[in-house]
Length: 119
Image 1 (cartoon, one colour):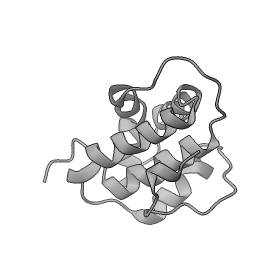
Image 2 (image 1 turned 120 degrees about the horizontal axis):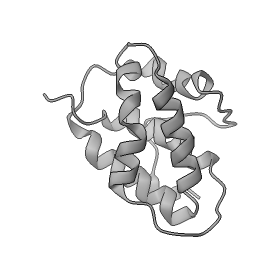
Image 3 (image 1 turned 135 degrees about the vertical axis):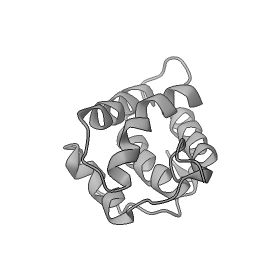
């Protein structure tokens, strides 16, 4: 299996961290290309490598870009779609990602996120 896309569960979890932390502000709609570009540098960390500064920067960029509920739902869906082919994800690292990037979340990170319920 190719490792060019993020694992569905890992990306959903990582994106949920980002998307649920973002405050709605309005503006241009987010695109899947933007989501992928922001998060692709996190794959190595989720597969056991060192965290890269670009990963945390990408997460922070996605938080800033996901301004509306629809943006956050779109980003979640993009990640679920793109991530179908990746293997080798360390799910413990998925839950550690927010802390590694200095992002606090007040909810449980779950691989079973329902994108339609993201606000």
